[in-house]
Length: 352
Image (cartoon, rainbow, N blue to C red; front, side):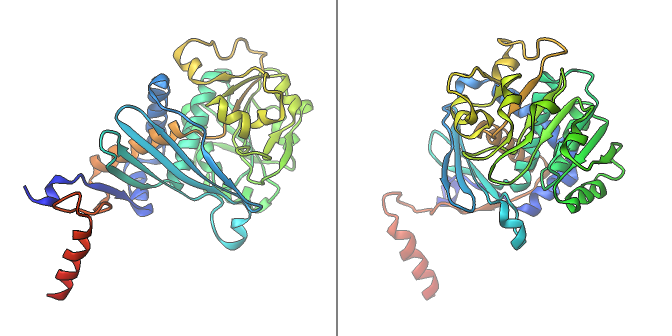
């Protein structure tokens, strides 16, 4: 057997490869596919070795690593959050990720995750709302109309049944961008002059802002009985979007409680404030919404299991469609104890 036949291939998915996957399958199908994977993996919650993400904070933002594994596969995501990046023409969020074999540690997939993170975040939001919002919810306020907003809007249209969006952003250009991108989507769009105007009459409120600050975008007086709040933007220490009074009057659901206590909206509250991990709702051990008047909050910070599910989707879609490039990410030596031989062999090839 040739040395190259012994080694597992690493499939590389670039940004353009991911664009091709979305174009071939359709964005709605990609969001739905990732949502199915997330639900399936959350139902295997106890099978995973879980930990909060590792974060390195600076005055300008945060860089994080998000690991998780089951008995067969390990995954991690590298991701940043730098709110001021857009002033320099850079995305606020940039990400890539890896899937590897647990048995050997061999990397099997290296993929862009910036586009994919927007898809998986929207899929997670819609999956949670399907279980926590009132079933007849049709109007959503979307506060924060930046890079994630179109994905959120389409996920809620397709998976939850939202038909009207009430939009607000402190940057009117962001709202105009969103309206232009959603033209022809079948959604009724209404640009609003304030958060309070957008929230008034909404069944669901999604907050997806970027500033790294303890903001109070939603206040208790804006809330109405039966609302569901999808709080997406608060995702690191010192960064929140909801007044603590909103949380205190709601039933609060989280992804991975040890992480959300540090990074989520509930960082404002005592450590014994009651929350429910969302996997329990999927598993049927918690009822989720109990009645039509209950206010529910999904305090979403993003958890590695969602990226694991998204990476599985990307890998399977790439294989199905024949998209991506096989790359040599690991040196290949005839004798695995003789790593130096790889350098010698390369020098010999160059000398010929």
